[in-house]
Length: 310
Ligand SMILES: Cc1cc2nc3c(=O)[nH]c(=O)nc-3n(C[C@H](O)[C@H](O)[C@H](O)COP(=O)(O)OP(=O)(O)OC[C@H]3O[C@@H](n4cnc5c(N)ncnc54)[C@H](O)[C@@H]3O)c2cc1C
Image (cartoon, rainbow, N blue to C red; front, side, top):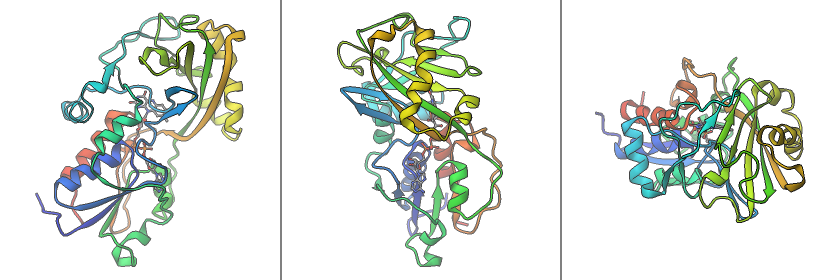
């Protein structure tokens, strides 16, 4: 395998694809810097500390099917990796198959932070033009690997793309009282075609909900998310609350507070055939596989094993 020790590489994005790519390229000797627009690791594997709760409002859980990802996650996180015990029910109330739904005890973004431990990262560094980072254009890097969702990457690379990602409106809802409604019996309810495509009870992730509360995360379906994408984030809980309370049998009077989040690039259709990219610019991310935590990490990991400068 080619030694990369003379190369300075930029990886855009500190999500799972980014940390896996950066780690693998650094292991091959390259000097890698992650450029991340937000304040830290995680990307769509996001957790929020809010009002005494720790809530995963992006990726809800992850699988550990591939032995390479399982080994990396276990080495990085140890016993902070925990398995959900309660079932996910479909629209008919039937438990879906479960070959291991895992979470990080302190919030799923900590998985990404642990996998990225020791890597060089510049946070709060939004890239607007990837070419300008290249040495050939007066920048400091020999090559740039973007792991931003493909529609955003295309923009950074100055390319047109017909491919659009699927948005998702998300809400976190807090109720007074523990284990209200159906929450003790199920971890989550999943009905992808419905307005409320996913809802899950964070109390099943031990220690995450503040004492005396039930915390639910809700994700709207694709059609509903597209129809309401321009609504302010503060209005999102109001759009989903009725459906959540009906599905879980939550007493409306116990409602305390809520927050909303708009994921404009939540999921890719997958199967992207990478178009011809400008010299020095590369893309890796979940659009090349599937929009899952494990797939994003594997995409970055595999790129790093085979990547060649030109
Ligand atoms: C609501 C939701 C629920 C999900 N649920 C699950 C689940 O339960 N299980 C599962 O396995 N997967 C789930 N997923 C999918 C999973 O979260 C993603 O597939 C995975 O996290 C993608 O990782 P990534 O590194 O490819 O991209 P991202 O995590 O999006 O990382 C890209 C990074 O690039 C940064 N970035 C973007 N543009 C710029 C720029 N211009 N300059 C600098 N930085 C930039 C972003 O801030 C981000 O940190 C879910 C996703 C969403 C949105």
